[in-house]
Image (tube, rainbow, N blue to C red; front, top):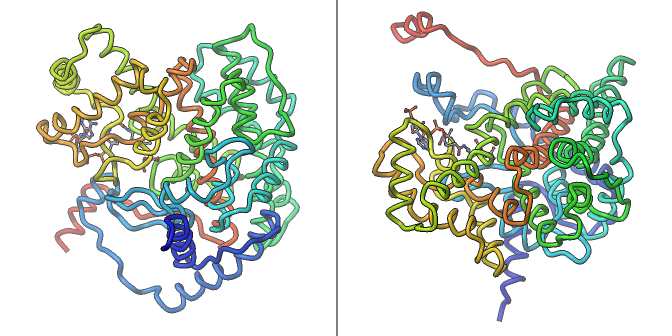
Length: 463
Ligand SMILES: CC(=O)SCCNC(=O)CCNC(=O)[C@H](O)C(C)(C)COP(=O)(O)OP(=O)(O)OC[C@H]1O[C@@H](n2cnc3c(N)ncnc32)[C@H](O)[C@@H]1OP(=O)(O)O
Ligand SMILES: O=C([O-])CC(=O)C(=O)O
């Protein structure tokens, strides 16, 4: 009899090799592993250019130009591809695949940010040792320079946490290795190594930066833990946020941060990092720009909006939470001309598998099943799709990841929902920065699509 885990291992190995990667037990470092996989990718690009430059893979309709480029096949993105019905795959692997094979933190069950980063960057599943070595490397680099702590501490508490995060990340470019090397006059094939160094430095410092913002804005009376060299990235983040004793929340954050890490290239934050990075801006300012795209309510800020909206619903409905009451509140939101936050998607046409994975986490823990806010989110997810279908506008009436990501944080005591997108911002660095490394390794060009005025477009249509 073939057991489920061996079937899964085979399917994972197959999906990885489908993407041109092989899974080998290895003791190589992250940089050595990348050095090993880069030449094959460079060769693949060279071949694509030489043999298929003129192949047609789609057409551009006026609706694409007027509709926010929805559906246009126009970007190269290595680490993940989004299927409208199945959702995201990281180098061919689904979220459940990743949950099965990516190493957790010592004593934990959920995949770590480091193991997801390793997979995104290299297309390979790291061994537990490789993942722990990366944790140690990141912890070593994790403290903030003094001028950044001074900058963050000088900001008014009333400044949105996402603005503070973007400012802090931009300021870190003071120490950019890529920028310094570019000024020295390095050659193109060397770009990726300095970019990688900046990307790892930035990912390493995000927990300390994000936790400092949380402390300053919401708990100025608390002292801040320093980076613990024995913890993984998210273990440190949770610790610095003041939740280190709550193993459930720490595990949830590991899952949250791993699965928000990448969502192919066209989403607003990833695309922004790619666009800005294509000018050879360094990774810090490229990712700072991405964070300001993430901070919009149609994108990452929706997770803050979901909590705000669900709390307002709870307040209005009171204890009498019925199917009818939730339905009425949904209609009230829609009739007032607002969107229902956490529902709909630019690409997905089914429930978001990230939503499903976070809901599964809730199902494994009785205290979460008993939580009023989590119950309300679950009930809303059962009712909203039919209401949105009847409303008839959105192409996807199902929940996206933002519909559920905040309620577990809220239940475990991280109740300041204006902060939630900062956690998303710590996560999205994994994928957006991965692509910056690949963009430099592959020598991708400046991004510069063609635009038209409406007059010019009409002329084009006539001709
Ligand atoms: C991590 C993430 O970024 S996931 C997305 C997070 N954002 C949200 O949850 C906000 C709510 N959702 C939305 O606003 C949208 O579904 C988006 C922005 C995510 C996608 O936008 P689009 O690709 O333009 O969606 P779509 O093509 O289905 O939109 C068609 C119409 O339905 C409306 N619509 C889409 N979703 C919703 C919704 N949740 N509630 C009400 N109306 C909606 C759109 O506003 C649009 O109306 P319009 O014709 O009057 O402009
Ligand atoms: O893919 C998108 O457009 C939005 C999204 O879900 C993400 O960026 O995680």
